[in-house]
Length: 181
Image 1 (cartoon, one colour):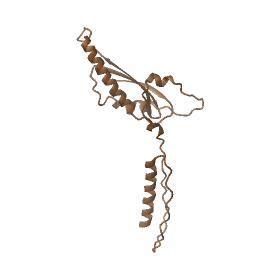
Image 2: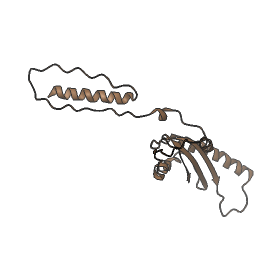
Image 3: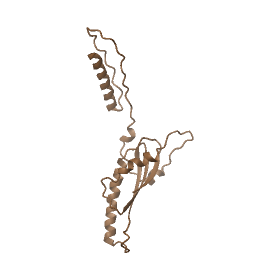
Image 4: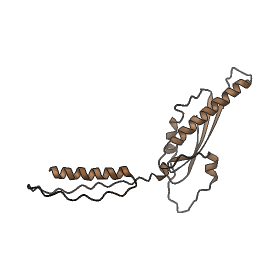
């Protein structure tokens, strides 16, 4: 019984090591264990298959292209193309947390345009607007405009970094969408 458990653990360990190596071929099979003095009934061996995860696209550095630049390259289309587009929920779901860690004031309105392909953002454009309070009818001063511009630049940098770090379900098709906060 111990030998069978040992073989099962060895097979599992080999499969786990193969999975960790990701792109390397599976290790050669182990030699059978020497026969024990006690003959135990043979149980069917459990085969553990390694799963090949195509990580080449996700291993590439994040794109620095804008939304407009990403969409300027035509996507090849084919009448018989059966690749699926991601659903609205799959696209917008991961976007819920992109403002985390970015100090966004309550009067800021943010529009994020995102192009996604192979589970990564391939183009991102962010627009930050500040709504004036209804109490103040005067336009903001020069100093206030400069402070808003500086704050908008920090928000854009933070949100852009967060969006490019998001991982979507893998799809070879290019999807694009707009999110407003």
